[in-house]
Length: 163
Ligand SMILES: Cc1cc2nc3c(=O)[nH]c(=O)nc-3n(C[C@H](O)[C@H](O)[C@H](O)COP(=O)(O)OP(=O)(O)OC[C@H]3O[C@@H](n4cnc5c(N)ncnc54)[C@H](O)[C@@H]3O)c2cc1C
Image (cartoon, rainbow, N blue to C red; front, side, top):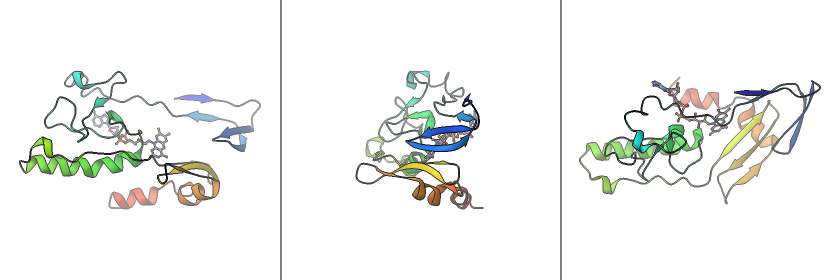
C-alpha cells in the first residue's frame, strides 16, 4: 500500500471532484493483486496475465468442470467489488446445486454483471457513488454519507453474517 503525504499538512485533497480540507495523509489502497498462491500451481492454465482465474459465464473456471471462481480472484468481466461478489454468490450456489443434482454444465445459469454500483465515503460527511440504474447515476456527499458514511455497511454485514 502506498501512502501520500500532502504538503504542507494539514492540507486539502480532491476526491472525485470533491475537495476535503484538513487532510494530511492519504492511504492509497487500490490496485490490489489477487492472492492466488493456492491455485497458481494447480490451475495455472486458467490464470490470466493479472493472476486471476478466467471464468465461463456460469463462473466455472475455464477448463474446469467443477471448480467455480468468484470475487476478486476471478476474471468474470465484472468490477472487483463486494457488490459484484454479492451478485455472483447466488449464481455459483445455484450452479453448484445444479451440478450436484446431476444437471449438465450446458444448462448452468449465466452471471451477467450489469451496471456497477459503488459508494465511496470520504470521512463521515463526504463521498461519491454510482447507483446501478440507467447506466449509472452519480450520487454525492449527502446520499453517500447517509447510506454508507456513518456505518460503512457494518450493520448490513453483521446481519448478513448472522450476528
Ligand atoms: C480500500 C478498498 C475499498 C473498497 N471499497 C469498496 C466499495 O466501496 N464497494 C465495493 O463493492 N467494493 C469495495 N472494495 C472491493 C471489495 O473489498 C472486494 O471486491 C471484495 O472484498 C472481494 O471479496 P472476495 O471475497 O473476492 O475477496 P476478499 O474480501 O479479499 O476475501 C478473500 C479472503 O480469502 C482469504 N484467503 C486468501 N488466501 C487464502 C488461503 N490460502 N486460505 C484461506 N484463506 C485465504 C483472505 O485472507 C481473505 O479474507 C474495496 C476494496 C478496497 C481494497
